[in-house]
Amino acid sequence: MRLLALTAILMLALDQASKYAVIWGLGLIHVGTIPVLPPYLVFHMGWNTGINFGLGSSADARWILVALALAICAWALNWARRDPRPIVAVSTGLLVGGALGNVIDRVIHGAVADFLNMSCCGIVNPYTFNIADIGVFLGAVGLILSPPEKTRRKG
Image 1 (tube, one colour):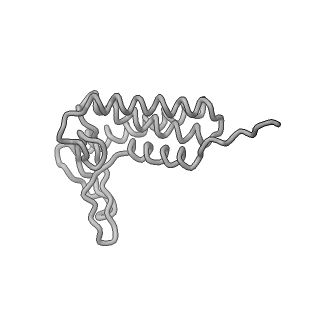
Image 2 (tube, rainbow, N blue to C red):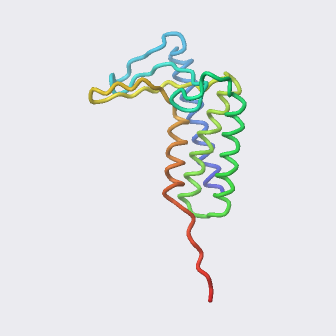
């Protein structure tokens, strides 16, 4: 559980520090867009009140989404408690740290602060995301690719 906690704390800190540095430090909240390596990487300010890709953003689901994120964290922590493999600990830490980063945004700002926009090869991506989203995605993929090992029956 120590590896899980360390991963979650690092993910949460990286997410919150990146948001603070880019949104407030670089003034993205005021300028709206900062080309970094266009079109591959552009900082573009976005406030996501919905789930993902703006889904559910028309309804004020702030507290429902906070509760859902916390429930998913509890479920993942329960899974990790029963599975001592390091890949499960790291994956759960990434998922939990990222989810908590977005929960903090929802509680403080009423929406998740997104600022990363990446496009490539003539495909223009209209969506923004953040470091927490990367953690949630990588953590979920890690857990999906690490199903619980089946125990053998004695007999």
